[in-house]
Length: 296
Image (cartoon, rainbow, N blue to C red; front, side, top):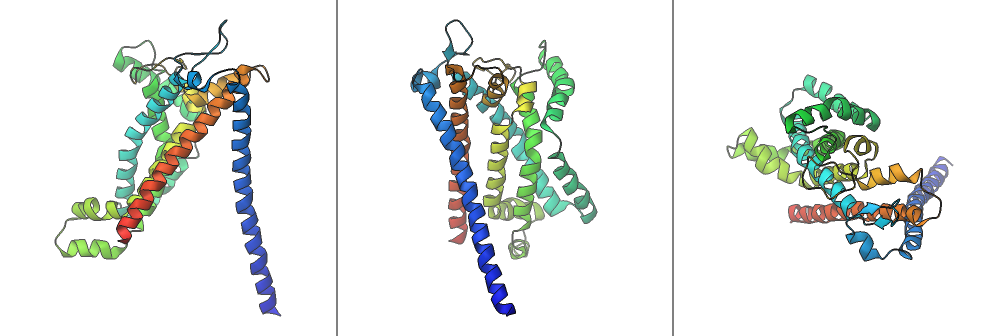
């Protein structure tokens, strides 16, 4: 009797887990369908090529302009700057926690880093305005520090917990036999970390980086508060920029319903969706290649 009950529970949970997985796929497909459906309404009025390559975003002008190139470049420069800061810091911190930190220090650092992820983005944005921005303004001789570099620094701080936690797990999961073999041929701890452990943990580290990129691209409130929101082509990190997420957040609440401007924000969201998807697919491609390389 107990055996039959156990089998019945196994079958029931199998279908429950299968249903939840299908539900997630349906939700994702529904979101994508909604974005594409509303984007088609926009492209009936604006040519897709003009939308992608247009140099000006000004939907409220007398002659509205729906060029998203400044928004794409702004999003790219802020995300790129954030990763320039977060990747070396994140991987270095993960390696230190996994290979160098003592047990007591590790038990302090890991919870502290994970708690950083719980800080609301609006708080990070506020700190960027009152702490980081004045410092950048003084350093560069600018009237204010609300620019791409400010946003990149804040996004790097927000991406660090994800990158550190996942990269540390990947480094910690490297079999001890790899380290012992390296030490056995006379390698130092640094040489073992650099030439054995990190290459072996590369798939997990790339996953951490891709999740960090996704967090940076999709962040809204921090970049809305800290980057100046100027929809211009950026020429450097000290220029004020307006990212795609900030544009949607600022304008969606005030735009008239079912207008070209309204549907244009859906088109922006669709492009943002595919940018994130492409970043994840590229990361998955390299992860699979590295796994096959290690398996060979």
